[in-house]
Image 1 (cartoon, rainbow over the protein chains, first blue to last red):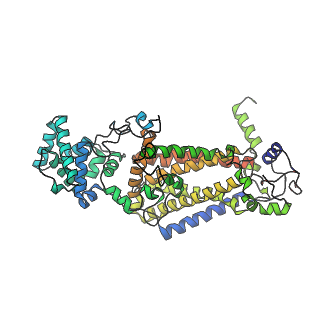
Image 2 (image 1 turned 180 degrees about the vertical axis):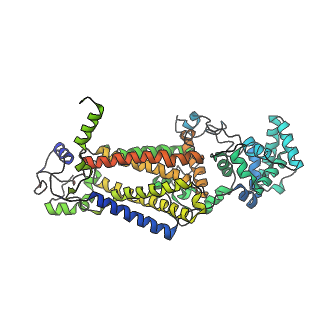
Image 3 (image 1 turned 135 degrees about the horizontal axis):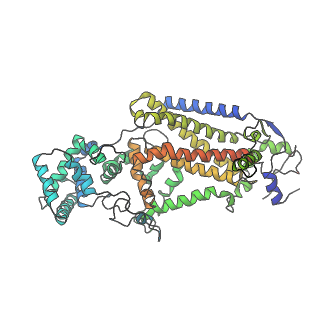
Length: 326
Length: 206
């Protein structure tokens, strides 16, 4: 005997009037908390937790001085990733878009970053420098904007031609740029740049944006990420440093970065704007998860695939209820 | 008297969620599967997360780098988060295959799904405030996605102070409120009856 869909919905919604059994909700909750706490304590004692020491500018400048030096020159020339990023740091590019939606650009420059002054000149100005570097700093500050750009661009191009090998760069009209880059490299090697970049002349500071951006402009952070198997193209989003489980719940978010066209930056428009497309996609899928009960097909699957027969097998057996065709 | 907001709220509460429903001592006989355990396990993991998180908050984000006790509490926080997500995902799948939104339980499902999304955001900010290499890497990589949507203008993943405050204050509060609403809805509506259960079927109604 079957009942109408409406009657079934009313029956499912009504308070249960059938057979019941004793249930001590407080006892169940207490036992569950105890079990989870014991498991957490056991795993903590046995496994600990991940804690890779953070990278420092000192470590970068000491281990790969040429790369740090070349990155400092890029910051002066305005060719680094940060200098050319666009919103929210500057207006150097349009940013990512999805069709007519340019949300990145529309949100504007909310966290202005001036790579020339904040990454190089201001930190150098906080130090007592040798005569040649102090002189270079004075020369730079006194020069016109065009002159500064010409010097830095010429030197940046020369380093690129020399494939990043600073000692192989021929002499040229680079003005004070080599001395400034050397001064910043020495400052980083001594350990003073980490604090200077964070403080920017102030005392209290909790915003690491400038440090993180500068790090990302060179190869040091990227190489460390590759070594730790954290790169996005290899499911790195859900990996963790060391032998620990990562954010496995981000598997679907990570998945899109593994497949075309999202994993091909040359592919336009999706690959080139993959970060934006995937954000929209995951937003839509999250909304879909919330709305599953009203999505045709998806909401009917549990009735069609009889996993529920296993979940409620005792009830079905006790009441002799056979599966109905949907 | 009946016009008073307080009286209206009390009457509505007593009608929809009397104490017998909130703290029941019996339940439908069909609740007989291990899958039902994962809801309470998820809440239990959340309790351990909050307990360990409060201790970490008292000591500050860098404590666990230099203290054995800090490392242990941080590890408890880490593993309870891992368990929390495992339990919650199993709970979510279980409820999907039960079609647990039936019988006017859409809002119960929706608040559970929203809690899942809010949990991901809360955990994400936790990874950003570890003050270790992981935080450096994740903040640099994650900024592009948020910036691409304009979200970076007010949710700056490279700002440790902002992420720390969101992680220990706003997001847990948000998740806590959603979780409480979800649990109250479960108690109010009760556990969804089995698919194919009908009042006319022999044995169902007694």
